[in-house]
Image (tube, rainbow, N blue to C red):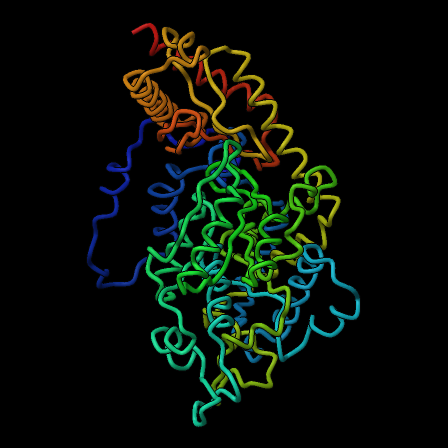
Length: 500
């Protein structure tokens, strides 16, 4: 298909309104139609003007080209149509999924052979969960943390004075009352992924139950402020469901001091979760794995297979350091998902689930530590090259120094460059700079040949939110020449704007 072999990011000047106008039909056709007719229209109306996420000049989002073997493998997985909710519909793929989880679990936590021999294929517990994305993986981790904190006592029957059924059985209000808590919080950096808001909402804490701590100048959570919040919560009878560390923030790519958060979690006896959906695969790199120090101490960790583990969309991962903690959320049914079965549906929030772990298994076996490490190292190196090229132009300022392979920067109008360097920008100047970067990114996107994204992020330096351009490089097809084309496109637009 021609679309797969072109390098443009998307069709020039085709608006979202144009696309929406193609899909205004609200009636199911009365008669059957031809498959060929449908496919022809699909190519015309969908494929041609879609975003080419494989394009090497598409360096602004967390989607990228996949290994070549994913296409035939995806056809086979679709044809098999396995459902990993239970072994009766996912007989072999269930155990394949468990093996993939065990390989990644070992890479994260580095526990010994006896541990994996006992738990990898155990029907009684699981090393991790496969779900449809990082959002459900994070929700699952917080679900486990909440239920473990407000756990049953005695035999959990609730019939005798010493027995309490736990939050799973009696609900949040009664569980909080039983344990003497007046409120409950999840504590993490202000850069927490928005899925944590969903987790707090779904688990009955409300979005105000997400207590965010300011970050420092390197966009890492301030540990002193985090500890102060822990002390305050415990003094005020506020349950701390979890401390959350971020390993590769979505906006900035920054990695919290995971070892420092782990020490706080141990000191105050609190669940420790690491959201490593983006940056987790740095554990494969000899160069960058040191930045992940402390992740092995986490109680739960999330990764996304469809980010830097290079699987198709729909592979979120939640790992448990202690696989027996899954008991706090386990659900069974007599007609299916029986307690003694190997069915993974008794552990996951989702029921029916495709065998997407096959893609992860394939990549782990084929790419291995060497392949994944090379991909991470290459991406981080290319981001640094991009940063060097931007600064060589003398038209932009650093917003976030790249910790891994995400980079934030912003262009400054020529007449304000000296003020920016001297630190004398006023509020009107900041508004002008923000407007320039919005216009520049919008125009680059509309031209369709190259792409970076943008965000608005709090700047400790300026004590305000600022608009920043955001580069994300993880596409194995992206070369230094593609980076140069992106830089050239931006500088061309920048010059055009300065001349007006």
